[in-house]
Image 1 (cartoon, rainbow, N blue to C red):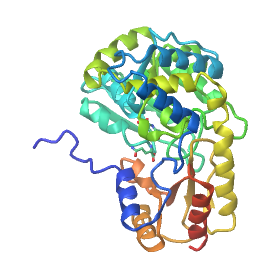
Image 2: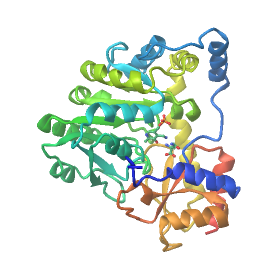
Image 3: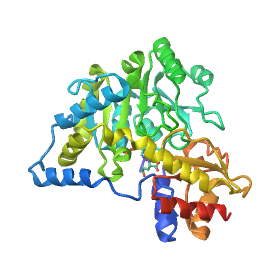
Length: 378
Ligand code: PMP
Ligand code: GLN
């Protein structure tokens, strides 16, 4: 078999969650809540499941959900995407990102990837014959080295993928980052793929530096988001793409043959639920409290806590405890200490290992406390 992805194994999320189950470990590895969506949202899902909406949704997505997204973007960022011309509903952000990359990348095109990078970007680039060009985020705050990015732009550069708030580091962009990105886009004519799935999880009263806020970027960007994180329903796998009209036309040509349309009743439930801004505007406070609980619980441990400005992930530096590779430590902790985390090196193409583990705090307080107790014992 001539593999299209000869280097790819099974994703770290599946590996660690499987190991956690096998060893009955507390699982703060894969990013998903161990609590349910609100009863109100579940009742809406029920209403549409029982209400005769069980056949195909329209190809670009249910009009009601695209209208709701347009309102959400207006409410949060002051731009108003057209539901018909700019918004396409996808089977989660993973399909949205794959479709965005498939739309832009021709064989030989280069795509700038900031590392550590969420793990679905590079395989999609490779499958389409693209060439990932890596720029390392600067430790310990994981800010973008824009000078390095600029030096890596060539005639073949087609796009740059950005992600704020950032998985796995919890770093966020500032308005200055957006401005620098906009200058690169104007100077070099490249596209931006902006992964904003944690858009409602930016802490400490900072605004989310969304591409939606920036007129120049909006015209050159494919913005991707997902409802899984916002409504505590990662298993629903519904997300969306927001892009200029010309790009949307090309995106939908691919979308219609990749997935055609997305789960209809759940789109309608989300459309009705998210008409109420309070259903997304409180999410940052909900997760900030969980972040602070985890940080307090770990304050007197031997782990060093890195800054966490957004997302639902906290990085910890374990160099005072162990010198082994992060992948070895993550496996050992799961088997011996009954705690599953995610090693950072898997998000680097060269397995760079700054001795960091990622902890997901989208967990019940009791789970966070149990995880912290194990970590304090190290
Ligand atoms: N991008 C990032 C940064 C993510 O963390 C995730 C998943 N948690 C995704 C994309 C994929 O989202 P979805 O589950 O909606 O496919
Ligand atoms: N995005 C989630 C994480 O970072 C996992 C999603 C998945 O398992 N594909 O943990």
